Image (tube, rainbow, N blue to C red; front, top):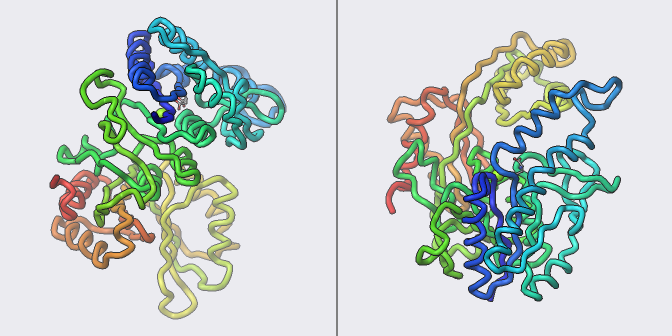
Length: 424
Ligand code: ASP
Ligand code: MG
């Protein structure tokens, strides 16, 4: 017997037929004798619709947020999950399963006060565990909790992944199964490289890099949480027939396990290739090379909530002037240029240049820690295809390369094959 938290995303509960299908997935695990708790998203598109409604409401004079009162935003957008949790509980009951829906405040999933982007602070799992022991399935509304002000707080878009992992940690589940519309995590985006392969296992650190670098399977925060609490998280599809052979296999069901690296016996050097579109590069030319210059640039940018990513500073030729290049999301370029020109005197640069529409391609793998030459292989392969590299950054387990947008797909395919990822 295992203890499993099963999470179903928006496309998996998009309509009543799919909710009945989800109920069959749950029934399979219950019938196998496992202890099960379920977390659901809203029907796909529902949260967008609710957010749109809020944003068309009139502004309240003097309110902290320019659009709306964040507490009411949360009261409204959390409602999508309330609906799906109730519907799934009924669908489960109709299959003879003892099921009951729970809202975030009823569990209680306690969060901080940051309405709209709240962080979970504490979950008491004892009640869910007791109910599991009695054979009851708790169907928990994802994406929501209760803040210190005693009001509903939502966790930020995509937050029901985080709800699921947090509940799995709180009930000490053996596994947190994330059911979605793809059947696992791939070596790269299969829409770009049809030879991409589904990974059997990915280490938490690698998944964190892949999730933050553009693979949109899981909310980044849910992976962080899984890593901290060592929640074995399994990505799988809800669209497969719930009763197909192997679906209920405890040790090796179809999908990708995100786990501690110790669980991965045969570690490849490179696990996957991720990419992020719509990057932009900003270069400051002939900058005074003196202590405090980086702080003068990046302080004001961060105060304006501009997310700076790759940073490259040239070694000064004459000891007095240097160049600084960094990337920001394309959508933030105009704002960044404004901030820089407002601070031109304080920073002390000659000209600023910018370029939009770039792509960051990244090679990820914890095996890199113990292997030399991984970066050189990438550079050689890209050079052979005539792809120019604009900037490079590395960490222990990844190499990120900035290139021109039109080369994105070629670069992804080239890197994917140069490490042999297309070979099973
Ligand atoms: N329904 C919420 C959203 O669309 C939370 C989630 O689906 O994870 O962002
Ligand atoms: Mg999601």
